[in-house]
Amino acid sequence: MIKIITVGTIKEKYLKDAIEEYQKRLQKYTNIELIEVKEEGLLETEKAMKLEAERIEKHLEDKDYVITLEIEGKEYTSLEFAEEIRRIQIENSRISFVIGGSYGLDERIKNRAKIHLSFSKMTFPHQLFRVILLEQIYRAFKINHNESYHK
Image (cartoon, rainbow, N blue to C red; front, side, top):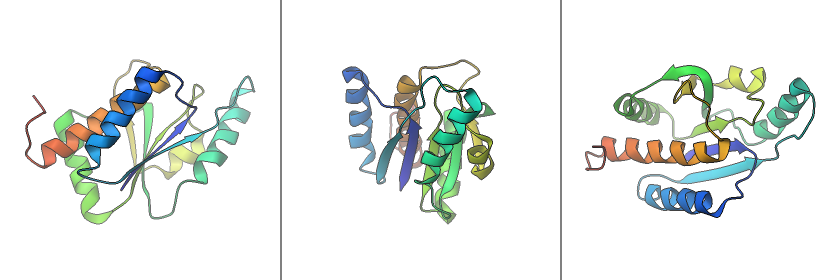
């Protein structure tokens, strides 16, 4: 099972459509759950991240293998990412990806992560990034099942 916990909601129809498409494609390989938690508005950064962290923690279980998405995280190629997913699934049936809001992630959440993952040093809109993450998870499953798609 893969869980993606994100701060904020998707409003744009084209992004919702893309997310639904990848969720549908991934059903062949794994159960996938998308959870959105409320993003704090114009609060002081530390306070906002703390409140968002509390909401995120409600959806994390002790047995979850937590992967946070952070600009400072480690970058992988698609093949390396697929290998990490394969390796994790041997010992863990639950992988939880966490995408923070516009302020980032509170240290409490970062400390729970076993992997701090970055897709780029660039900044992406959080709503678009969900699509990118889902696509890379889908690509990883295609690679791990030796199915064409990767190239």
